[in-house]
Structures are given as C-alpha cells and as structure tokens.
Amino acid sequence: MHHSYFSGRFSQPRALFLVVAVAAIFVLLTGCTGGASGKNEYVYVAVADASLRDRVATVYNKTGTVHNGEKLVVLDRMQNKRFVRVRAPHGEEGWLQERYLADQGTFDQFQRLAEQFKSTPAQGTAMIEQQVKVHVLPGRKTGFMYMLDEKQKVTLLERRPVDRNAPVASAARDDRPKDSDDSSDDETPGNNQPSIWEDWWLVRDAQQRIGWVLGRALYLDVPDQVAQYAEGQRIVAAFPLDDVEDQGKKVSEYLVLLTEPKDGMPYDYNQIRVFTWNMRKHRYETAYRERNLAGTLPVALGSQEFEKEGTLRTFTLHLKDKDGSLREQMYKFRPPMVHKVYAAGQEPPGKTRAKATSSRSTT
Image (cartoon, rainbow, N blue to C red; front, side, top):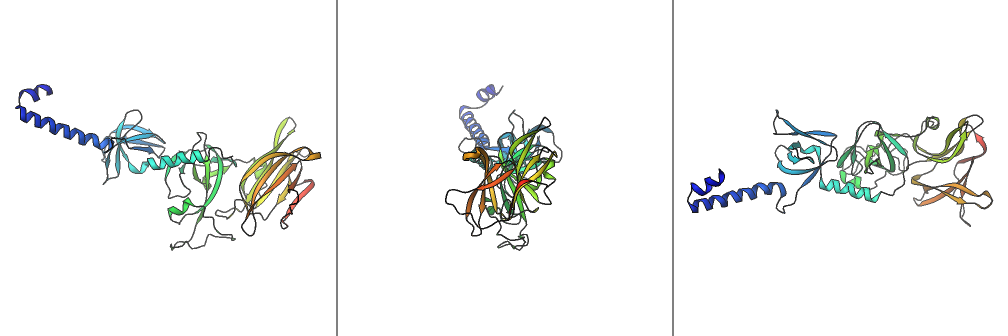
C-alpha cells in the first residue's frame, strides 16, 4: 500500500521531496538512540528490581522488569522528569526513573576496582545484616550500583573511615582522622557541620565484585566461643592460626584483632589476642595479648623455619610508631606460645604492654 501511494498519486518532484523528508526524519529518530557517533549509550540497574513503564504518567502499564546490575540500552531521555527510556537484555522496552540507574563511568570504576584488588588477601568474612548498596568509593554520597542481600557473605579487604559530612571528593583519599581519643566533635574545614566519622569496608562478594559497604551493615563471622571474650571491644578480624582435634572435632586457634567500639579511629586495631584451645577444659583461653598498638591492615600469615623449633606458623603486623612511620613486626606461634621475631642485630622498639604466657591463661 505504501509503495503504490508514493508512485501513483504524486508527481515525481513532489514524490522525491517526500522521500528526502522521510529519510531526514528517520535519521533524526535513529539519532536519539545511538547519538551522533552511532554508538549505543548504556546504563546499569542500581536497585534490586524495577518495573519498566509504557508511559511517564501516574497510571501506566508495566512492560517488563529489570534486575540489579543488568546492562540497559538508552533509547530516549525525558530531562524535565528525569526518566530514561531503555531496552532490557531480553528486548523489553519502557521508561525508568533515572535515580534507579548507574552510568557507564560508575560501571567502569567498579571494573577497575575488581582488577586492582582481585588478588588482595581476605582479612575476614562478614555477613550482610540487611540489604545494602555497594559504592564505588567509601561514603554515602558516592556512586553505587550493586546491591547485597541480607545473609549474603562477603570477604573484607580494607577499612577506611569517612566523615559523613565531608564533600564527596574527600572519600577518594585516605583521610583518616588524626590520633585522638575522640574525633567525632571535630569541625569539618569549610563546613559548619561537625565531623561524623563512619567506617567503610572494601568487600568482595561471591561473584568477585568489589566495592565499598558501610561497616555497620556487616556482621563479622567469628565463632561465638571467641566473640564472647571481646570484653566490650570491637573485633576487627580473626585469623585461624592452627587446628587441634578435641573429642573427634576440629577446633581452630585464632589471632584476633580488636579496637574501641566506635567508628573513625585513626588505626584499624589497637590490640591483638591469640586464643588457643584447652583440650583438658574444652574451652578457649588467651595465650597472648598485646595492647597500645596502632595497627593497619593487612595482616600477613605465613610459616618459617626456626632451627631447633622447626617450621612454625607466623603472622606479620603493620604497626605505626609514635613518629608516624610504619614498620612490620613478625610473630611466631608455637602453641600455646607467641613470641616476636627480630632480624639479626635488630633492636626491639620501645617497650609495649605485652603479655605472653608459658602456660595457658584463662580469658
């Protein structure tokens, strides 16, 4: 029908004009999808689930559902109402609120994070307490894309304190507060609001996606028999050092890092304890404790040959001295004993309040 319409009812010049006009309109319409370069623009779903609409109105029909992390093609934008018309992976099309989406730049940042930290050793395992957003930088005001569900497990890689009232740009830096007993009342430069420090953790999920999560949304995976001895302190990480068998069951012995139960401290931990298992009393006991540290993650676990002692389990801490310099301190674990290890000729640093026992002490 369209073919006969053009060739039979109009004169040739008029028909030619109409063909050109239609072609121009086609170019304009296709340009809305691909842009001037002809390349598609992509966005990514940044909420758990969202419905596509057939129109931007109070009453609309649902044309499909998209899910967290899915890649969508942008077809059109409605700037005044902040809606985007998209095409889903299975071909459904519809309108979606812009606030439900992350742009290509945010996606690319997550890809770089995954590459940068793909080989970083885990510093612990945690459970998600409730559904939480995964951010590309630490801080509530930074870009986000992925969602983690309640009861989902993640591995912990790095901690960073962030001032909740600071500008977003500062989240890209490691702006740890200065050493003090409490930095919560500090004034933010150029801001009338007081500093409110929050701990953020870089985490890796089962799909190897990496991003920043608010610390209070995480529940550290530590055996209850060890956690009960925290004595009001916050357990930052727990590392299995050894396994023993008691009444046919395997029991792990742990290095545990602790700190004050508040966010924003200038160090990751300030105390360590080693818990060993008393097979006679069938309970954990403290084999070693050291306080007044300024420790920074990560902790490195390993093993080393020690002449007559044989091959022993070791762990190495990164500690900050009073002058701010960072040093490594190795410890060797010969159950139930823990001792510091110094290189030949190395003088021990200033005295610290440490407690090592030759017999197991009760916690």
